[in-house]
Image (cartoon, rainbow, N blue to C red; front, side, top):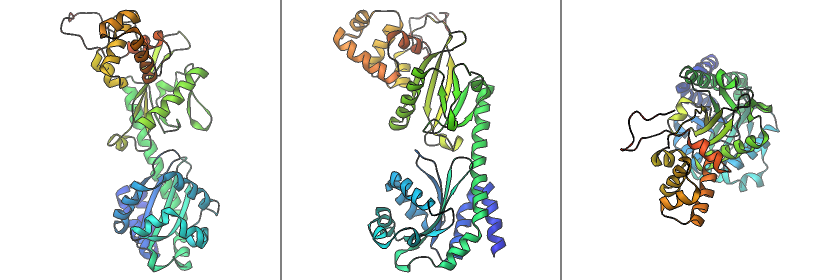
Length: 369
């Protein structure tokens, strides 16, 4: 039985769909109702997988859980060591009775936990927890010993699972390199998950800062990057930053794209895709539709921005939109905020990178980028 469980643990390391049955086997051995594996990174919602008996309850719990409190709880757990610990060993009865997470679990038919929190070399944290109903009482010391006998295997399997996801991300980033896109996959805090060689070679513009976070060489530009990362995460909207290549002053634009829904399956360890677009001199004016879609501009803001990129003054662009100059200045401030720019020259350089759609009266052979 012990060897069978060990074999299942290592099978799950390479076949994630095997984790529910593996967790179920460990739950049975420890007298638990079910088990959950969470892969946690600070600043992101944990990814998790559970055995069938607790999957539905944990899905409800995950939707309503306060993950800030979860991180604080994890820190308290880790302080006691990276072994399987019972909740009654970590908290006194008063803390257990008042813990909101415990109440949520109890309302879902659970309540008692035994768990281990393992720091992985990937920078992630693997949390293995096994659940019992509150009415069944806490786990026994024997159950604790059984789970601790599998701890080293779980640690290796968790590390391998996280590492394989990192390698998947790297492979997909390198695929983007093959079609000419310098790119990187980032976590919410800017930590680099994977970076293409073409982007790494732009070391006069981009550097890998301490703790593996992506940074820009120029301090002011780096502040803009931090603000853009925050915006992508809080608003789930793309952000773009116009830059000058340090060696020859060629303009480039950093596009930050949130990884959401099925995109997370392609890059499961990342939150944001960064793509660098080099710009060429162009006389084209980006379409209003493209500006609305790329930068979340309103139609009026997009028409004003397009007018400015066509070389018109603010007063001329305002007249075309049908607004006053005072209103145009208000719109322009909003455009600056949404495009993470600070002056018209930066804005125009950025807009020149937007996809150009010719209007019906534009000649098909008009010069382009």
